[in-house]
Image (cartoon, one colour):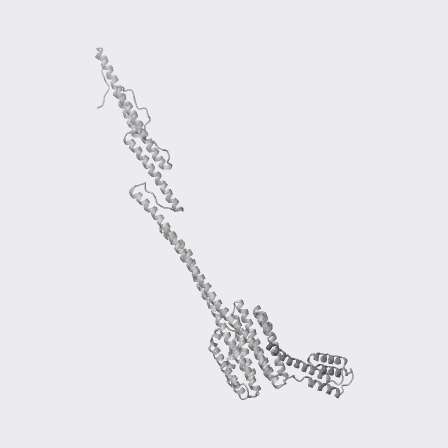
Length: 571
């Protein structure tokens, strides 16, 4: 099948292989483009969902703080601000619920789906909680309610982070999550200590909760430093030196120091509850008192240390001794006054600073995600068009080369056909190429040149033969192969004819002079050989006949009439 195809089609078939491969490459590139763009778009959608979750957590955290202030004031302050914030929180909730199906469509694990359901369930009872806050119900569980919403929202944000696979973007996203958690725990501390400072006292349960929140804050700060880049680490360190943040840390330390002091008091009183102290118990009492030194005024610490030093080992503790130490500690462990409004304002400012970092990170994450998407689209688009251009250029070059081949081959074919039709060996193939086709054309032209020269020489020999100029039949000897044989044979034939004619002329010239003794002695072949034999036979016959007749005539001249000519002659 292929051997019957024109060479141009064969060349195009050869080009078809890389063209098909290029086409497959373009198709695969297009498919990869779709996959990568889809993946990047998916990342952007996840980032958008996490921003909705963060917005929800932020607004309900603000509502939690305002609710705490409203309850702390006994409903006399902050009602209008609380009502306005509730609208903001509802808007954030509605925006998230509109996208809840999108979140559920992601390949989340069972725990994440349970968190979504729990979040929806918690949001559905917010009007009931708000009603209790408005009614100033003491046990409204509002703090737990808002904290649960925020915890579920941030937990979902953490779950969605697995979909952000680009390393740099993932690190920024994870550092942002740590800041969101940090802000949430700061809000919890703000709300819890707001009540503590407003009342001037706290329960052990409240102290435990605050310490738990503070431990979470330290944990999130450590994790943030693990994920954040140098720029945000510097900004975070600068945030810690802000006057409001420093003030918050000082007021928080007032509370934590008091908690530590009360714990020491509890341990000390527990030891004093014994009827008699051992030497080991005395050492423990002294250690507890020394541990309380950083939290006590100097005069209180000296008096307490003096009281404890009067206690002796293996002796009963008197009631007066216990009472004196207990009274002194009762005064010492009273929580120092911290203005609740100042605390709330400073803590809010700290949260705003952290939220500012969160917003900056969110903006940077969004911009980076968009840039990545645009870059991916642009890169893949450039690659697609480059591959397409490569394919087109390949096809164009292929067609140009094929056309060049076809033109050259057509020129060769047409020239040969014209030579075949006209027997004009003076024609030449006009191909100005230096490739194999050009070499082939040059070789054919050289062959035509040899053939033309040979035919010219053969013509000259033929003309010489026809005009009887046998001495002009000469072979130049510049041909090879069969062509040399043909010309050489023509030369040989002409020479044979020339030799034969020359010999015949010589014999006939002698006959003309009456000399019949000459014959053709050259070795002639074919018909010339037969002619040679016929001429020689005729001359010999004539010579014998004339000899016999001459003998008879001579006898007659001498009068001898008896001799007769007995040879039989022809013709």
